[in-house]
Length: 594
Image (cartoon, rainbow, N blue to C red; front, side, top):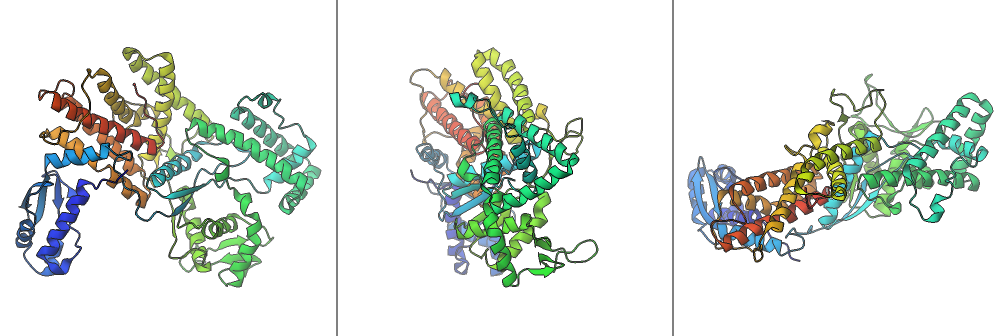
């Protein structure tokens, strides 16, 4: 496997060399190369360089042009406007570069030159509570970023910081002690059958509601529950065992939801709030001894000059409460210590909604002051917006309750299956194929709607639009992939995919080919900025360009004869593999027939 430099990267190097030859003091100058409507690429770096060199930009552009004689890569260059260089790439170079990509398992996409260790915190459901629509974005975004970074060669360690600790567990455990069969399964799992997530959630919901009812009406039970919290925090064996039973029951439910969402969650990545309990006292001691945190009205606080409330008074980060209890800041700071010191993370990512922005800003600054975050560690909160209903308000049921995540996914699959059935029956899909494709299209539609939205923006959840075959949807992209597969099924014996660099490219072929060549550059950028919507945008544009190519350039009946058929099949095959890989990195499946 060998990486294949993109045409853009090769041009970048050539133009940079020409700029240095024209202005020796500008060694390594950025040619500011961009795709262009007037040519294949436009180099805009001459203008800034001319200004620094105090020379005429058009004259400098002419000098640079003289250093760029046409070669096997560059078919032509012309100066336009005040000094722009419009560059046209040779057709043969385009096809040859794509041929090298198709020969590589990674489509020529290079690995990061300096991969590190990224710990990414995402998918944070709460134990003994149902997952709702608010858990969707963190899970989908975090999973896509994980896949993209791993493909880039980064070592990625997911951390699912589940809510598995707190005072409510005293109530749950105490009730379980007094009603020991509340979480009994009935023995089905002993026969090797798959544990049912819905049943697990039903048991947990029943436990929570029953214990809450007694807690609110029985003062003696309330006292016993509060004492049980102390036992839990002290590590009492019986209490811990029952708490673990509640956590394990919740995991059965979590796994069933993530299985439906087509996201793999494994036990070793689930490191909840409880995992940092033993570090909390030491975290506070280190902060206080170093002077980073101070006592204020009995609480241990960290103050910031630039963070003030509406009254103008400083808003502190409260690491330890006056009663000795610990909140989220202590846990999150302990997690930073663990992830940098023990996991040796070079990058920390937190996929958490935008409402936590101030919290993470304060936590990160505190960790820097304490020396737990250094200049060698990149730390980023990747805040995401809210899922909205068609009324523009946070997405809820008609009764005003949060929508269950499973209900949302089930409805998406139901709608998608109807769309697949309408189209699939015309092409002879079996009932089994319709059902399987309905799941892949429905779940893909939900994920794509999320991932095609830039992180900080809210977006409207509209299933009718999401499962449409038209517009910027995953279904449109999946259909483009299925169309490439259909072409190969219809190909006659002897019609195979093969690159022919000697053939000229039609405009639609060139547009498709140049976009295919940019796949690696796109992924490299995303692995740096952590914005999966850029990949979604790239794939939608690729599907659109392929559709234009399909309409304008007959593949199996190409007029240019067998060589042109092979060359166009070659473009179809690379398009298919790029769509498959790109959607896969977003966690979206690609049905072979749609």
